[in-house]
Length: 291
Image (tube, rainbow, N blue to C red; front, side, top):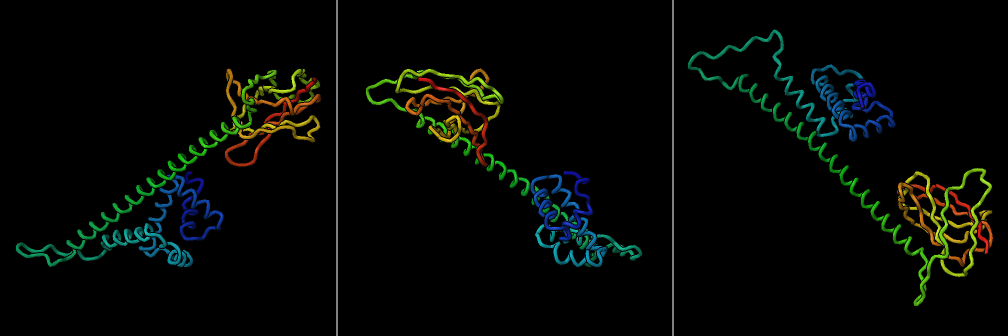
């Protein structure tokens, strides 16, 4: 955010409420998120307050100033600050007040008034500086809270994905130990590829372990669907799956029950599930089964 992005003239219209609503909303967001923009807005606020006190605002600018400018405590403090500074200036041509002669007490004249005004200006300056510091600290606390919330959400999604993957795995019946009938490693199907990996199954129970090599993308969770080659029938599905890394390669492990497989060609479609938004297809894997 620089002065070139928003010149002083634009900031001035923004403070007077003369900008279109869309531009006003953009500057509202920038003045909160960007420290440089916030400092520029404060500087123009002080300039406007000085111009008002010196009587340099006229016409529509003066009307907008009176109607829109003094709507926050910071803007009202800026005007009071400018008035205090203006009262310290001695107009040219004003006769100098003679110093009291020896033995005379000053009759509560301009010297004491000037010191009181200097003290008031100092107090207002300290109040403005403290408010700016407090606003910056508040933005930092809000950013920290948002980061912590997002970390908790990612951790919750990982736990849900692990639990869902465990539920998707077929559990062996009591007293019987099931071992995978075979392990199939598949890479994403290339466009125009004519050869399809073929697997011969001899058993009628158990699992087919399929390891899918993923494209170099990363999602917190995945969904895998087993479809017939024509894509007209869904034979099996697993949600909230987590990928693991093997020698730098992201992979996804599936346990397909043999009972859902027939002697035909299949398509495994994998979709990535982002933290926000809709799922996106990240790969398709074809293979054929013969029995």
